[in-house]
Length: 420
Ligand SMILES: *Cc1c(COP(=O)(O)O)cnc(C)c1O
Image (cartoon, rainbow, N blue to C red; front, side):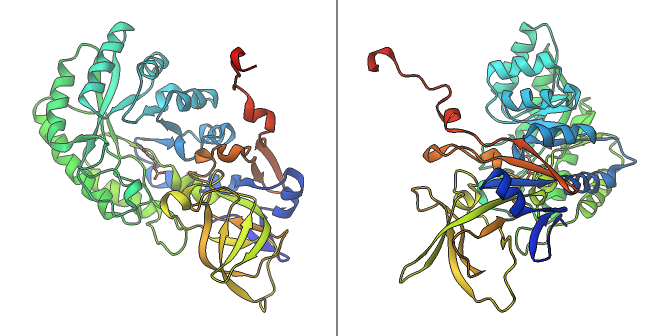
């Protein structure tokens, strides 16, 4: 369900024509729909209305301050994976006690920053990290609240690069080893055990792996309870998938119901870390056709957005639906084409062997479902300024990130005197 639809043959976001935004901010640009974001937040929250819980938006999916401010307004916290994300979350007004900190490589400086801020908890990913956090908390005269990210060895049946819950992955602590680590943590002077956590992967399209993971955690929770370790928080991570083409992921309602049924009676506050399911289908990337290039093998549609703007196709072979901003007449011929960017890499494509209406130089196209892991993964590769982001609400839009300039590209670069 989203807010991008044709009116009078022109693709709109809400009531705003995308060709108008293109004219005013240039191309390429990211466009997000505020009403869709709100609907996704509300749909995710709905099942837990009567249940102790806190949803912590996974900021790595989209960390624009305007988007985060919207999350703040709806009571969401944040799942952060770096000091930069913690900084941005705080800047967007997300209270520290609604922030969880995940990731295998937290630096000493980042740990100090999070302890001082007073975050809800660290999700611990290794024994050594636990020791370092204990030491840093001691140094700062504080107690660090922690949960252990348990790796339940469940196959999420998603793309290997976004799957994290198998023993072979770098994430979390083996379920067998978790008991030992909790017992160690209990003996530490500056650690307060507050929760237990798992996150098994991203873009999951079935409920089953989530439930399997929770079932495994429940066994561990009972075992630890017998040893006197009880938890306040049960953090179930994120990972709920969305429809990019013909996937049929569970609706948040169905996911929520299955989770609630599985955890009932545990008496713990549920923590969720959704990213993609909130923002993925609330955003698109709009780009303009620069050239048609026909070779004996293939037709290439060369556009002004590249893998530096949206890397998911290059990185995961991800599928994004492509729609022309100006709808072509039904009788328009279609053709099989690759939509490619201007970057000097063969992996720089947005779509491969796609059936598309015949596109011409100057046409605008929308790359759908680009709200998650789109802009946040963008870069300046090939010295391309990062594109602007706009947020549409009804018949108005705001620029929430302005297009970088060439000066921005050299900000921070310095030429040593010896080279002058
Ligand atoms: C990436 C990530 C998430 C969010 O995943 P989505 O698939 O976007 O919901 C949540 N928790 C952790 C620890 C993550 O690494």
